[in-house]
Length: 350
Image (cartoon, rainbow, N blue to C red; front, top):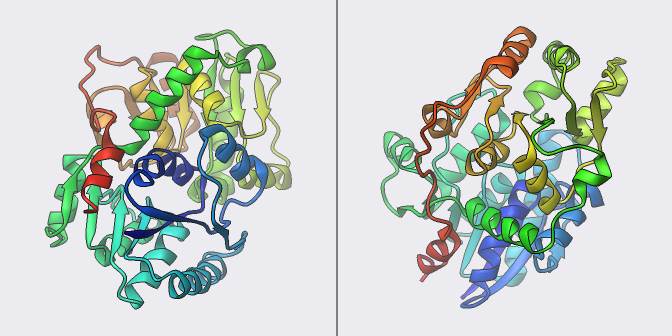
């Protein structure tokens, strides 16, 4: 079969790293990069580090409002689908690239396969929530990471073509840990930090970066924490912080985004993770690192139920208090599969 796979943002590059390897053993894949994340720090460095095949095409959609960006992707994806005439379109996650791919394929009656289907925050103010709901309702094959995701789809009347496969990000994490074991990352030496003697932080969701009040609360919390913090800064957050004049204390080390292998090393070496990223919540869990999620809800509720993740929102007092007091409850149930999700995804394609 010929399959067009769409990627556009860092989380999708990680997922494609697992699936594309297996997919190309059995099918002809055309890898389409929308250009949603377009500079080297947000895109190229991940392709290099993850050993993903180079994209066959890049739409170079770039940044812009949700409407502008999605419209550019929608036209570009449609052109590619009309040219390639694939048997299936494969999409990942919940970005604008995901939405554009699902809509373009549905209009052309090309079956859609959604990897990481069924996630819900139940917060429609999140652009990602809108994207994932629409994508799921336009998909014919829905590949879910958890039983919770399947239950979410069932509650919306989606029961056909739904399969539990686990999380493809676990496949990639296991690969990355082996890579780091064979050739240890030099990131600790570069940043002059000692494992388990620092916190790792990421902030990228628009609800935090585009809301000055929330971002100020997060900055205040980081400044009140008396431990080294390594903070790979998303371009959106860097711009907002610069424009607002907010400054961090000397213990907060702002760095450019790093490649996946270095990020896995940093997450695994942290005493604790502070994030609003869904992917990092899971990676922290798999690496057995406590996580504080700076949101009011999470799609990855299992990590909270297991006692390794706590929701602290963008409240500086909650964040600083939890940094001092939060500790996992000692249990560690297996979550999101066995590290063979990509293989299961590809086997279901036929």
